[in-house]
Image (cartoon, rainbow over all chains, first blue to last red; front, top):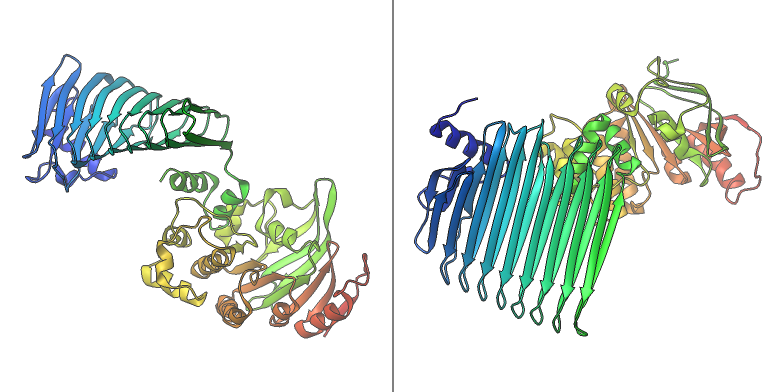
Length: 317
Length: 245
């Protein structure tokens, strides 16, 4: 399958807009965006107050993105990474800095609709400045066949009163072999972390989700939530760690895994407290979709597979 | 006599080693609202599940026919596609699904206006369309939404399991009007209830006890018998009485 740069751009943006993104913002003058196919930067559009310094590497790109102090972005920054081929690798290295009191939302679309044997790795470090708010939503779109290895690693540092919301979603197509790690150092006083991961494994997909938050700042708080649905012969492991290491630190880690068919799930929510005035709680549940939920929808004329899809789409919303 | 839309004959169901339906026979004709009255544990909900085809309530003996067709080989889905639907006593809750999306499952042709009309018939306002069908709804609200969903489906046979539970008495008259609408155009309604006033509002009623139908007749006569013999219960294993008018 051969694509030229124009069709790569059009296809990636089109898929992004069909899968919950704001594709219309790509190409518009008042939005920040970057579009990358394999290791080619197809588009890069900064705005005053936002700097993008991206370089093409042998098997991907490296990008430095900076939002200046006090800059409030009304439109989300759209990062569209993808590959339309069946084989290959793409490594995205990113360095994101959100200035003090700035406010920004990034949407990273990772689009691999035809991938069969593919590695998609992301190495990201994120620094959220004092009093800043940063939301990072990562949505993956994979094809219905084949295996893709997805290895996203994010290391986040929060300064005083900074807020970081991270939302990882991989529910479209095959998960393949997923190994995601998010490691947050909430070192700032009164900083806050909200992490949500949603994954839908099928066939023989393997899903490994690791969310670590270290509440090192006094009064820092964290809420870590994971929802993993596994069907067929897929398997899933959730490892969540919240460490309360400062006075007044509060955290909660919550994992729900739902299995159907021969799927296997394991949840390991770990809480660690190393300061006497910190408090961290956890809960985890692994179960099947209750028969009455499935039958309730079948009584409306849906077949069993359709009923499960409706229930799962609600769970992962 | 009009042919039966639903024909249940000598149905036996065993569950967990116990006999929970013991030779149930019942008919529902087009245009009828038929009540099945009985105390808790009589087997009423088991009968509803058996008609709908829920796997754990598959009959070991007897027959269930719908418009002449044998239902026993059919799945829940196939029965629903033939025109049977069940409003559950305790409708399931679905995380992340809005009332709007839930009602849209009832019919592909449903419009926003149709959904608002259906909600108004169960005394819920349009803003409910944006609520989630999860634990944020009370049992009564969830019940009303289930009835609205059934209304939008226009099934040929609505099986309503304790439709009055969670719905306050003031609303009962309105709910009965809804049931009457469901039975229009040759459709029919089978109401499972433990309340004699609900059964009395039906066209005909059956009285169920110990997994058997012990009485069939006019709604008023069944109500009278229920009040005199079943409230409180006078016999643990009553004989089948007769048909009363």
